[in-house]
Image (cartoon, rainbow, N blue to C red; front, side, top):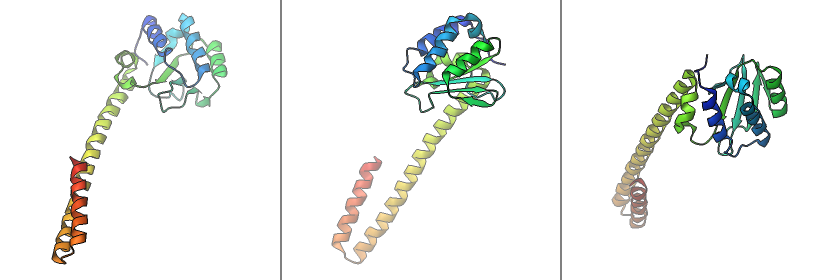
Length: 183
């Protein structure tokens, strides 16, 4: 079950969300319809997971990489906002899970406070994995650069042993370039 959030909080957040540019303009009608109907807004729960056995509405802004609109109705995906609106109107007492994709949502405290606890945990894990990924990427980059430097130094030694001045200068230039890139 989702976390209880007042209708006033939901309304305030959705009004803000509607100021963003949505990928699907017709999806805006659904949110406006929810805002106009208190009893429907009571049924809205914010989440980050598609609920296979429930009605889940997914709406994205232009700044998101996610698809603009999808409505999951008991394991069926509907991409037509008009059909989704009809379903919401026909069954006003059923829960509506709402997934919103927009730039900066992982840092938007108002949004995070409205998410059910499972979704908050999901976002927390996602942030942690992002931090691990960045750390790992920088470590891998440092190791690759270090290996490339070792290889260049070996080739420089070989060029010196062979008294190949031209190759020596080329390799030193590459080493200096690598040092500049890694600093």
